[in-house]
Length: 403
Ligand code: GCO
Ligand code: MG
Image (cartoon, rainbow, N blue to C red):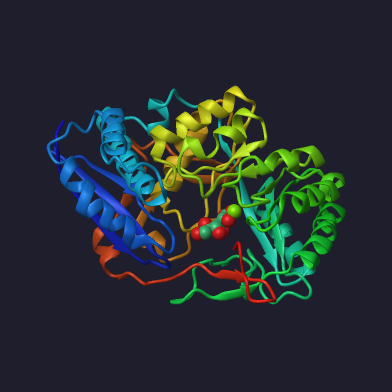
């Protein structure tokens, strides 16, 4: 079944998304997500100029071969741009295979290994009281797991906390990077109290998560983990910048608080040591940034051997196409842990027609053939590209810090 067309759609219904459309000779269309927040056009160009021309005439069914062809064939391997581009192709090809087979993608991956996929939502607030009310609102909606982030006294802006309404936190918000100030001391002193307040009000039944967003040293992370042990966290996420995998040995020596890492990883090599030395508990690689369904399953299979569970990134800057793909993988792998669900704000729903459902804290991708998401190209054309950057962090002395 030959590929006869491959093209890139850039649209900003609420935020920027890059989508790959692959068409086969019999008119089957597959969709892939190629969105790399703040660097969207780099992936769009990589696809348009270097990948799409190579797809024409290839057999859409040969997913593994096309993956290897694009990965090994470029010579310059890995990195977020290449791996997001390959992911988009891979996701679109799985969509096509499902549509041709008349089956939802999870059936092609071995079928459902569970009835639903537990997701966690984002609760936040400009004070602890406001954050607690947002946790309550999530529990009312049926969430079983909630990530809690709150403003920190003495710090102007904090990751994960929106300027106003708790539900609309948007990381990429400015046409030049917004500058934030980071101070480790106030953060480390405040967070145990903040998360303790959640336990005090809601008890221990709710799964509680927190994102450190790469900001601590290994020793500071160890101390935070130890201070949080009494709160029985589901996980703390990205405690340190994770390109230094051996740093996690130090964290592990100091705490039993579970650790989740991997949203910025793009290949199995980024987490090989973390997994094989059992330095983490959850691997957060995403389907759209880590080489698509084909490569994500390889990472998850390695993780399974070492008792590491999955906890894929699911922020709003990953499009509904990759969110659906994530749900298909989550439903089928044996070592699923949890899936992040931030949702997509309107008018994304005008462009992406989704079939996935949320019920009682669990999600299901639906049973439509393929991924179950269709893209309305006419609607997409109404929302032109809108350049945005992620913020940066500086310490009080002006030096750059991890954001
Ligand atoms: C998360 C992430 C996001 C990232 C965002 C960057 O855990 O959901 O940390 O909020 O900051 O995806 O584009
Ligand atoms: Mg994160």
